[in-house]
Image (cartoon, rainbow, N blue to C red):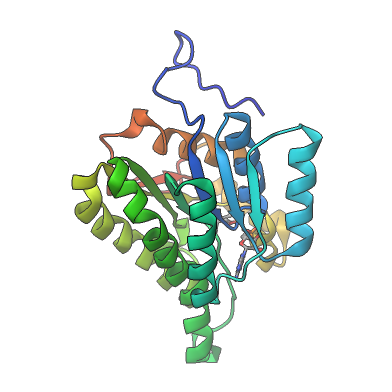
Length: 264
Ligand SMILES: NC(=O)c1ccc[n+]([C@@H]2O[C@H](COP(=O)([O-])OP(=O)(O)OC[C@H]3O[C@@H](n4cnc5c(N)ncnc54)[C@H](O)[C@@H]3O)[C@@H](O)[C@H]2O)c1
C-alpha cells in the first residue's frame, strides 16, 4: 500500500508524520495492522498495544518482511487499567513521550439487550473507553509541553442507529464521540486536536458477528453510496491526514469513513 497522498500537484508537504510517536491500541487487529504498517512506511514510530498473541506475532512478522523500523509492541490487556498506566509511563519515558494517541481497540459482544449483565456492559466500557482515557492521560503532559498533539478516537457507524443487539458497544462508541468533543474543547489551547474516525463496515474480524457474510455484504453495499467494500487503506488515509499538520485546524469532529453510508 502506498501511503503517499496525491493532491494532483504532488504530495502535500503538510501530510507528513515522519518521526512522530504514535500510541495505537488494538494495533494488531484488522484495521490496526494495515494502518500500523502504513504509519511505519511513512516514517512514524508506533507503540502498538494489543493482547492477541497471534495477531501481535503476525504484525511483527509483517513489519519485518518489509524491514520497517520504529515498531514497539506491548501485549497488554487494556482492561487492566492500573497495569496499563504503569506500562505506558514506562514506555513513554523510553520513547520520549507520545505525540499521537489513536484509541482503536474494541470488543463487540452481540446479543439481546436484556441478556447482558451490567458487568458485561462495564467490561466493554473498560476496553473501548476507559483504556482510551488512560492512554490520553499518559500522553497529555508531553503534548502540552511541546504545544502539539493529535488524538483520534475510533467510533463506529453503529452510533447512528441501524444495528440492534450491540448496546454496550454502541454506548461505548457514543462515549468516545462525546469525549472527542470534550477533549477537543479542553486541549485546543495546548495545540492538541482531537477527532473521531467513524468506520462504516469493513471486512475484518469485527464482521464475523454476522452469521451470513454474503447477505451482510449486500446489506452494506445497499447502504453505501460507493459500491465497493471498504479497505483498511481507506482508514489509514483518513487517519494519516487527521494526525498530520495538514489537519491542524480541524478538531472535535467525527469523520465518517464509510463509503457514503451516513451523510450528516
Ligand atoms: N471493521 C469494521 O467494520 C468496523 C466498523 C466500525 C467500527 N470499527 C472500529 O474500528 C476499530 C478496529 O476494528 P477492527 O475491525 O480492526 O477490529 P479487530 O477486532 O480486528 O481489532 C481490534 C483489536 O483490539 C484488540 N483488543 C481487544 N480487546 C483488547 C484488550 N483488552 N487489550 C488489548 N487489545 C485488545 C484485539 O486483539 C484486536 O486486535 C474498533 O474500534 C472497531 O470498533 C470497525
